[in-house]
Length: 139
Image (tube, rainbow, N blue to C red):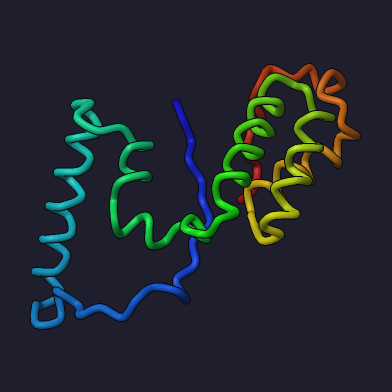
């Protein structure tokens, strides 16, 4: 299973006309549920992956924080290295890469949370008998 998290910034979204404005709540929900079911079906039938959806969907891309900025590629590169190092238990290396991520985007929640977890455990995955994952006990 893959888990995707990303920051969103709704303050920069362009003003658009609400396509549901003239519909009753019941009709809005029906249409939204139908669209959601179509999307889930495509994912389950492997017509599209969740990562492709995140990369290609216009509405999702508008929400992803600073993706169009020039700092996106260096951030993504450092985050991928940090996360792989984190999973492998090489927490000193992961910490170094997460620090680079946070220099580029100090508000990145996933980088902050994972780096704090690493620091709380003194950069030592071995003491936790690390298996590449942890139980999430809080959001």
